Image (tube, one colour):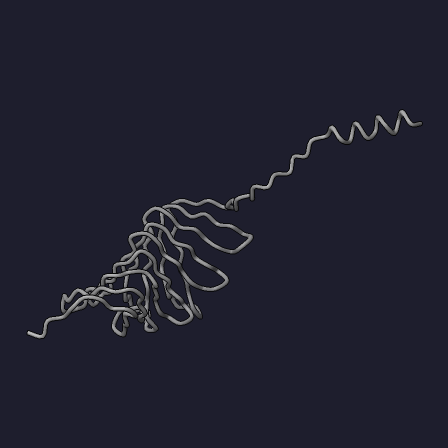
Length: 170
């Protein structure tokens, strides 16, 4: 009997554990190419999102868009107001927002432009935000610089949180 117990303990002590301490990376559940997504509110268009590649993860209800992301934004009258372009973006289906990253440009139909590295569009608030450094070109072709920005989607009611530079009063 002692021999069997000894053999049993030797067998258990020789087994390998295959558990690793490295975290498992989230893997997308769906992959689509040349996608077009329409976001609506009460049946009315709010945004038209286009991208060459979409990865969807069903666990966190988040879409990752890469390779030429374009987001057309529409006002309450269903009129096109601006276009956001970026290298990649995340669309949160639960929070109803888009986070855009990499060479982000917001081009409003009125001629104003915002250039930054990251941007958040909150559909519920119907506003865009960034905490990153930025360049803003107004309708008069004045170029403003700063860090932090908040605006409505057509860039007519905007605020730079920490402006920098100088303005001549000539």
